[in-house]
Length: 337
Image (cartoon, rainbow, N blue to C red; front, side, top):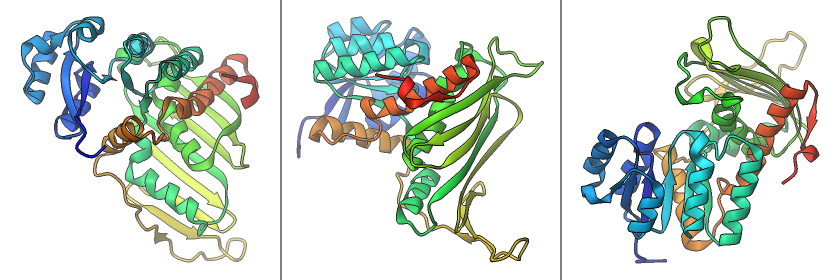
């Protein structure tokens, strides 16, 4: 589509996480912001300053914008609980959709959105930007190279100091809004999840009305096992990601991946760790999302962040939720589209 007209976009939710699409797409000649939607007049004014759009391009509701502005795609960056109804409106209008993670707050809505988009012939993508981060791009490339052995044991722990619930105070919010990032990275690097055992937790001082943490054991179809935990109720941010194979261990040290070869003897002296070569990654992880979305629309190249592919991630989210709720191990084949 060389020299094709830019894709005209409606931006729904223009504050907080809604700012990045405005900044990225305004600077990208492949796109042209056409309308802004938000319930807050001050946020609409700030968005107009970024995009240069007139006040007449501002709307309080998506249906008003769809009826007024000519647009090819809708970018949805509202709180997660509003993703499904807004995406349905956009799909019904025949617009392509890029929705912030998580795609929905439940499995049934996710399946429904993917089905609607496919029947309408529009492209649906989810802004899973973590998979485009330099550390994840590098880990994926390192594992694909075969140089570091076949992974068999993974530890992924992310505890966050996020004491105020804001829009995350709904049942299983920690899964549909945060674990979805981690599960996207895990599935991207290790393949589909086969089964999950999980338990949620909280703290006495938590301001969340629901549990704000979850932990579990994740078995991948290819064989590796991951111990996983995340929470929004830590006293200090803590992030650990370790991948072990028979040959050694890949460990994220906060700035780079380090490779430590397995010692040749029990309690033997190990070789010094060495850094893992960086793989090329977008300067901004969200740019990877936009590139994938554009190529899907323009050339039919389905990215890993397509709605259909994202169902594998939300299937794992659903498995986490069911395993915790039902206090048992949940298998992949129990969660069907």
